[in-house]
Image (cartoon, rainbow, N blue to C red):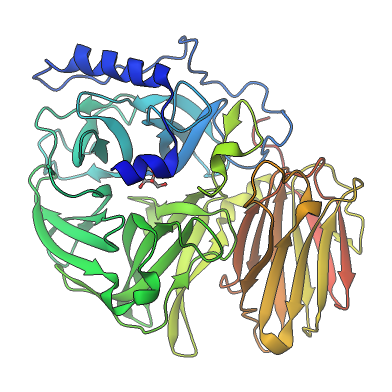
Length: 511
Ligand code: FRU
């Protein structure tokens, strides 16, 4: 716990006072209290999307109107609405007072900020977690109640639940909290829950931080939980570093068989520096997860800024939709934006593929992005745009060379392809824009394998005012990076590479 606080930030004194006041005033509650959310009229919480045009303000990514966010939490699809909760500080642009903020969307692209959903209580701050639709009323809160499961971060990290019977408009804290108590484990957090057909019960994955493990628990009713097993990095010593956080056990189908993927976010110890998302591929027998590969760590994204991503619960058509926090704990606290701090990534459709005998996760931006896509036009250099866009580059015969995005301020972001070494390298140098806010922001060597298909490489690059998200045709080359250019990069230069390129504008989601 102490290490956790050091890792993040020291809470401002005012926040500590608020916490004490709140803890004392709510410590006598005995029945299930409706969580007293800050309302839109609070001066401390702005829930409209007015404005949204400050410097660096993302125009195609979710950001709150103001204040700090980190991990996406409790993502759940209910009756045509994609709910996105997230770690939120209702009172400022630094980490602290952790609560669940809330936004909704009917297309995963346009978001509406809602009232803060769950705020701290006597058991502590509201840390990361998940939400499920309890279709069969296993918990007794009502059929189709939405049950949020989160970590109460008080003296110890314990697991608690809150439920909603009005489609996530309000949550009621369960009077029997915590549902998994803890008095000795230092790191024990971020419950991610799904209904497991294999064992006929709810299964929770819990991250064990510096213990480098994920614990699994089972429950018939979401209230009473039994320890099932623990998966650790003993066989994967390369993963034995950094805190293990925000796990997600996801079932995929591949060649007619179920294959399970355990997503584990780690910080520090990511692919380059700081935060990153690794995964293990294997089997789940209803009690134990067994990884069945020897390659490790396997990274979901080899850029710097995709963290704490987990998948939506109850998504239609078996979709596996993931969203990440588009930042990195190495410098998140000093990201040069105001009055909000941090954005979410574009939502991604996750898949599983097999390449040279290795099963790997794939990521693609969800198809709903087409809803904000304008007309494609062929380009050779100048994009002629001053708004976000998707740039598509077809390289029919890969050769050694560079792709450079730039603007009229001589700011640039370079991507180098070195086929002989099977390397794709993104370079976020001090020329990318504003970089002086943190010593670890400049990253001139973000490497990935190229993952071409018989020498052919196609790239889709989604560029917003302060981010670049890059995907290749098979979803294996994935890099998400924040950047802070004075104006959006609007020119592309090819050096040593023959390619055809086209671009389409992506509309401002706040208009
Ligand atoms: C991951 C994380 C979680 C924790 C939350 C606190 O970024 O450290 O483990 O629940 O952030 O804000």
